Length: 438
Image (cartoon, rainbow, N blue to C red; front, side):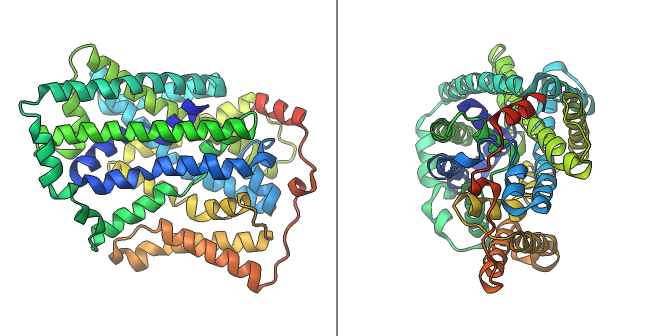
């Protein structure tokens, strides 16, 4: 469970955009990305401890539907699916780069191969196959990062250059963090984005996969510690590269590592490790999306619809094809695509979900008003406030929270008493049957 949480949260793109941003922005990005570890720790120590009543649910949309009504549950399913397609497209891109490097394929062909591999594996393997991939990824990647760091360290002619970079380069100065300018503001907002538990469908699925709250708490706590160690190792590799050569092309650092430092054997293992990292995230997303679509989109629209393995496989294939098309068309920054994809989910779903987990209950009307406010702010932000240089995600979440609380208290909304609070939990047998079939 720890391995699958870590693989789902980190993603194959992190080595690419992590190295790039740590190489160019140093301490600011290192501080921002360390927020992921704090987020995982909050999920384990604070949120998971309050989610016992959700463990019999099948998805985040089902939970939101139980708390706020079927319309909110349906919106959650749509947002959850749209919000992870961009992240899935990134994994296809990363896998295609590695397949092209390893097999000398043209990039489009490599992307097609990556999409087919992930879709078939996730559709026919199920969640057990997904989890096994995540364990393999954790073992391989955990061994490769320190090995790569040692190879670069041994290649340094003067190890004192590392100390000089840390003490003299402006990007490692505390002034870079606490200076008040547009770039520093961007990284403080990015830090906040990483810290806030987004509770996206794949991560939420990992919580309800646990056999009990104690196991969920421990798994997320271990994942937080391991994530922090991984971030330190990536930062260490980026620092060594900067000490070796400060004029490298930032978005080609992984290619530089493969060509310059990864000798035959290590190069193959590094490529396989990166592919496994991307694949483990991709199949986790596809598995969670197929549950959302089958259980929370198709079932409400077509009450007579029968949940089946075939339906889940078809849904996984459809989502995979959409992500594949996005992967072919998108040529921009990986981190930028992650932030844009999050706009479909966090400003709409995360706020009422976190409030519900923390014990706040309101009516469907209040939740819908908050969701609409978050969506409108995100949709209009680029048109009205793009000159500020601030991403729309955090303002959208603030708008959602403000509107939710205002509607609850100013309109005199009464707390919605749900089936969960009444103790009418779903039958464990029925839930297990749904889990097997889905």
